[in-house]
Each structure stands twice: as structure tokens, then as C-alpha cells.
Amino acid sequence: MGQIINGSLVIVGLLLIIVGGVILGIFPTILKQKVSEEMAILKDTDAFDRWKETPVPVYMKYNFFILDNSDNYNSLNDIVLKEKGPYVYKETRIKQNISISLDWEHISYREKKTYEFVPEKSCQKCKEEDYVNVINFPLLGILFNEKFKTFRTTINDTYTKAAKNNTLKPYELEIFLNESVQNILFKGVHYNLMDELNNNLLIPFKLPLLDPNYRINDNYTVLEEEWTINTGKNDLKKLAQIERFDYKTSLINDDMKTYIWNSNPEDVLDSEDCNKLRGTDAELFKPFIDKDDVLYVYEPQICRTVYFKYWKESSVQDIDTYRFRIPQEYYASPLKVKGNMCYCIKERKDNKECDRSCTLDISRCWRRSIGAPIIMSAPYWVNGLHNGEDLRKQVGNKGLTSKLEYNDENFDTYLDIEPLTGITMAAHKRMQMSIEVKGTDSIPLLKKLFDSKANQSYIIPVFWIEEVAEADESQADKFKSMVTNKKKLAIGLSIAAIVLGVILLIIAIVLMYRQRRTGKKIV
Image 1 (tube, rainbow, N blue to C red):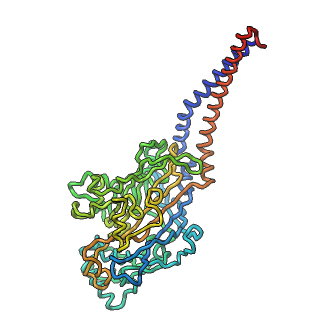
Image 2: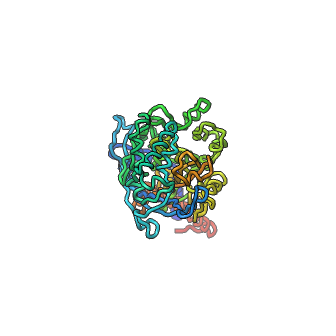
Image 3: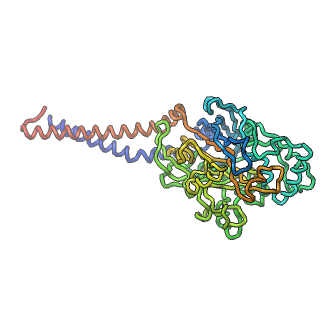
């Protein structure tokens, strides 16, 4: 009887170990197959519903660089800027005007974004009606406009004449603009100069009509340009990859002639790559992400593809994720990283502007800058040359300082991605907008610009923004029920079977050992 029991224990133990091992071995394959079936953006699927309406709450945090010595500065050399914010807005996204190809391989849409001010997440006692005194970037953007530089004399003459005729508003005669947050961001600030330029018959039709009501966003409700992406139906590696933006297949302006990034003959290979549409919108990537993957995101705000590399392991709501960030070479000087050369749009590539790190001149991205010398970067130029210290020092005579430590956690852009599904569980996208101007005597009305050092380049920041999106508890629970809990259950049962099998084998061995020592059969 004892031998029968021992034999049964051995057989059952071995079976449990084998079954547990087999499950552990084949479960990843089964799970991958299941994920593969559920991730493509197809009709009547959960993936389509998740894609259509962003389930993760998104918040936009605006931090303005305001003039702190408005009563006693004489030029750009002695301004003092300090940060004020954040002014936080909740952004609600939903995809509209959805058009799907007959084979369900391509899908086109426009995304509707709605903004709502959130006082409890904003700085203490901050209201969107607050006035902030920032560099007058709409005015200076026209006066130093690269796209309209052949008309610059006419523009300056029009400006001077309008001032003499008292048709300009007081803030149109100053290099700093004191205006409310809501007007700068959403409602608009009216510039009579734009009306004057639109009505000036000396300016050729090549100069497009300028919206006199200038603001960063079109309104509290914005309908973005059309995206066309791959659904991943036939190839999950192409899941959510952009194929067209604003009906274009490359980064080209609306004249369909001017590429946004450098297209000089010696750079033709680089320019083709730089002007290529590539990446997703950062909400979703291909499944089965590896640590050595390079992930691409198309960012319409800067008309450029951004790439991310693995940084470290992380977690969001107890969901294991990989943290990917923008690497330092992305911000490097074009003279130091050849692949960045096409992003220096200056006429001469050996000048000092091309040797700057962590600055991106988007003046040739007309849909965003209208030709104004807008400079995009990481906040405080962190990750630039000497970690941006040189650029912070050039702001006024005291430089620019932050209350936060200059590190990647505070100022870099990173994504926390669940590697099995490729879903972004959390995102921190940070970007700073500045304007580049020069001391000049060609605009005598702006005395404080006239008194600045002649032809010296000044990069003056307007604000930096942080886009924060993170899965909340309810969204995390849904994801866990879909993927994580099943994975943990299968692994747990497999390990339990193996452990139980080992225990049964140990019991059988102990019983056999005792039986041999006593020379008796155990009943």
C-alpha cells in the first residue's frame, strides 16, 4: 500500500511540475497571440473605442516668463524675468470626421480638443484673468519675420506710419505685452498693425492675410488638422503610424514647394529623412516593446518627428512600464551631430546659430510660426550645451533661474509605456517657446530694442508648457482586467502547480527514505 501511495505522489508531482512548466513556457506565446488579436484598430473592438476617445485625463500646464522689472529696464540687456504658473487647463480629446479605408488598413480623422481652466491644480490664487507681462512675441514676430523679410522695409514703414496716425494700441509700441492669460492663450489679443498690413497694397499677394486677433490656440475648442494612420490590421509594427498629416505625405508648407527643413543639395539625403512623416501621436505604439527599441512620435507643434530611447523601468498604478525619454543627441548642435544639420535653417551652416544645442528654429514651419523667429526647446534649455547654462545666462543681466533643479525628471520629456501592449500609461511632454530678436536701429519706435546691443541675438522665453497624462485608478483597473490580471493569474497558477509538484515529490522521497530505514511498509 505504501508503494502505491509513493508512486502516486511521484506521478502527480511530476505531472504538476510538467503542466506548470508547460504553461509557463507557452503562456507568453498565447498572451502575445491574444494581444495581437486585440490591439489593431478595427471596427467594433475595444481598441477602436480606446483610440477614438482618449481615456486618460490630460492636463496642460502653462508657466509664463514675466518681466519683473518693468519700471526700470532700458533694453533687453537688463531685463529680469521670473516664472509664474502653472496655469492649468484640462484638455478633453475626441476624434471626429473619421474616415476608414475599405480594407480597414488606413484611418483618417481630426481630433477635437476642448480646454477648461482648473483653478485647484493651478498656482495659488491664480486665475486665467490674471495679467502677465511677457515679451511681445506677436509684434516682434512680424517685425522680425523670416518669411516676410523681403517686405521688411514696407512692414517697418507701415508700422511707423500707423504709429504716427495713432491707429496702434499702446501695447503695439512696447517690446513687452501685459495681457491676460486667457487672451494670450485662447481669446486673442487684437493687433491693429495686422489690419494695416492686410490693407497695404504695396505688399504683394504672396503675403497671406494675418489674423489680427492673435492667440496661441484657436479657441477653447480646437479642431486639429487631419491625420491618416495605419490601423495595424496587416502589420502590427505599423500600428498607429502616421501616413499623412494635413493631407500631406511629407513635411512641406501649404505652398507645396517649401520643405520645412533644409533642402540644400549637399543635404538632400538628410533633408529627405528630416522631412519624412514618421511616428505615432504618442498615445499608442506597436505591441511588444523592447528596451533597445527607438520609438518615434510626430509632434505637430514643432513640425518635427521626436524620437525616444529607453531610460529605465517604471510603474504607473502598479502596472510595470518602460520609461522612454528624448535622448541628449536629439538636442545636440547640428555641427556636432550630422543628422541634425538639416534642422539648422540658416543660410550659412558654419555660423554660431548652427552650433547651439537645445534650440529648434521653427520659422519655416509656417502653419505654427507664420514665419516668426520662434525657437522651441526643452524648458530652461535643459539638455542643451552645458545643460543650457549658456542660454540661461544670456537672458538679461541676471540670467534665468528656476526654483527646480535642472534635471531630466523636472524638465525632460518622457513616456511610461506598458511594453506588452505598447500603450502609453503616462506621459510628461515639456516644451518651451521663445522668440529670437536682435538689437536694431531699423525700428526707432521701439526704443528699448534700439538701445539693445546692435545685431546681438537675444532668445527671450515666453512660456514653457507641460502636457501631463496619466492613467487614473479606474483606467488602470480596466487595463489590469484586460492584461495584467490574466498574466499574473496564469503565472501564479503555473508556479503554484510547480511548487505543489515539488512538495509532493519531497513527501514521496521522505516516505520512501523512512520506509527503507524502518524496513516496514507504511500503510
